[in-house]
Amino acid sequence: MNRLNDCCMNNTSEIQFIKNYVPDYPAFLKICLVSKAPAYITTMGNINLLKNKTIAVFSSSKYPGKVILQTYDLMKNIREAENAKCR
Picture 1: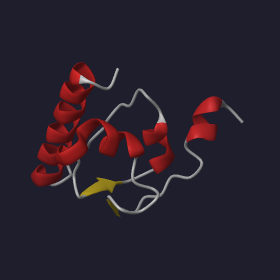
Picture 2: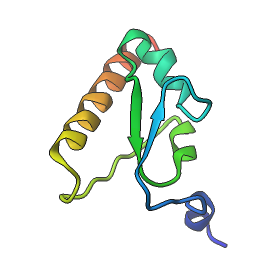
Picture 3: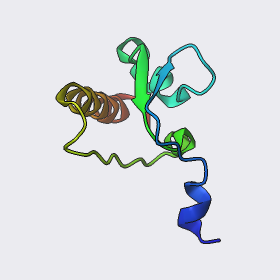
């Protein structure tokens, strides 16, 4: 099996809402964003990919605009937090 398949084996095509108090919520969001960490994140696919230091976000024009804007704001907050204290 190639590396791409290894990282994507747990994919799900269902949208998941992961609240900030459950174990699957990415710890780096709480650590780096502190009070700016979202109460929940919306995911689709392998949540374990968010445990990596480097992340990429892909979207579809079929996603609701609200989800795209929330994702943009989250990525902006992560970038700002990384520049401030999470190095």
